[in-house]
Length: 623
Ligand code: ADP
Image (cartoon, rainbow, N blue to C red):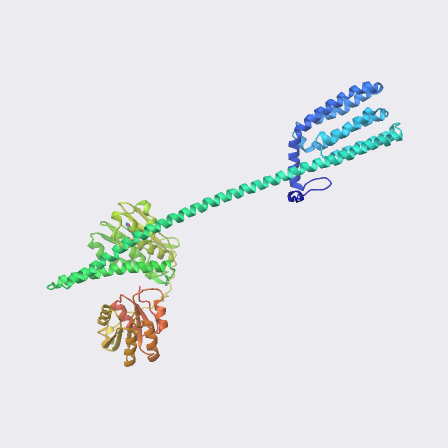
């Protein structure tokens, strides 16, 4: 047999058939609304029949017909009529079963009286049976009330027949057989009818619930599909966009690297021409320097953005006097701005001792420099203003220009990587489109926000915030080595330059020639180790990391086995995070990134050989 789980899970009282509270209320409501129409029809019919049977009274028992008519027309039918009329009121729903119960008892009681007066007349026993069947099956009285009504009528009949009339006992027993059977049959049948009505209700309710659940699930599904489709479309657009940007970036990058390269190689070639004047030579060298700086800028930007994206960009918090910072930037850019026929001004509203931020000064410098450089790059006339305003808990810096402006729809995009590569014509100037995305990343790293206000043809204002934490205590953490008198080292050191690249070797050689008493050279790691073995009195080794035969790290390890004293400074062209750690781990004392800046290198060396040398203190010398 199939197990009907919905059937077993119906929760009801086995005797009264009632559901638990809320369901019962719902059921009663539904039962009423489904039944009220049938009830009215049934009741009208019952009233008519009850009246019509009055005809029999005068036919079969004329001597009582007046009394019987009085029972019918003055007692029972008025009650039935009142109940019928009440069925049109609002109150009816609450009391209708009780009213029906009263009606049935009144009707049954009326006929019982007639049986008592005329016990030999079977017409009225049949009438009793009709009352039972109307009560159990016809007028929509619920099983429980019909049962009460049925047994009450029977009880009244028995009391009346036994004590107030002369009904013979045999007849009474005989009648009870029929009446009890009719009641039992009516009771069980009505129980079943109501049970299935309730079950129908329960199943349809369950069905409704499930339909709602399915509808809900469907809606959710539709929503999920919609969301997923949107996400996919977005991902697709992003993928296409990044593909487009990548191609544009590569093309732009190739241009950006080739242009300065062209300058460097071209003017180096020109330098070789005989008969150049001193001025021409200087001009060419300046162009070569400028092109080199431009290329270094691009490479630094690429390294920085890679570090940011890899999450390797660190911040170092120190105290920073923003007034000084802004003044520095103003002084630095003033000549360039004025050379372009523009002016530059600055505003530092806070007094010096309140203009202190705890932040990463290198990053703030980079942010401001980037913004001012762009302001110069994208303006031909007018004024550039730099400054800040004090707000509730931060300082809002601004760099304002009267340049070409930025179209509204690009205000967000310009902070994206490589975006410059993507815009046409006059907006695309020299640059890789990385500056603003680095700037934005820095601002956010320092806990601020950046935005742009700009109008095409009028100018742009870039604003960024930095948390203002006016701590007025002196807490300067940075290692600063003031370039002191380098003359103390002149001609003092025995140096080995381990470097496979001839140009780099010449450059370092040149830089170190003043402080070198003797400068030795090695082209490979193996050679470097050999030189160290032969020269235990070496003071300094400038160790390139990438060399044939044996790399700088391995060479350093070998040297450390025989010489723990010699100062080894690693020099690499990678400029990557972790280079310093790798160098120190291999046994180097310090590290410097190429291209090597002469002053930086001398300061670094002085740290180990100067009067106030601070061995093993790792200064951060590379910006
Ligand atoms: P780029 O290296 O190309 O200058 P940035 O990321 O610094 O890259 O800037 C992205 C783009 O934003 C620039 O190419 C330029 O179109 C626009 N832009 C940035 N600053 C300004 C400014 N001050 N005025 C007008 N346009 C600007």
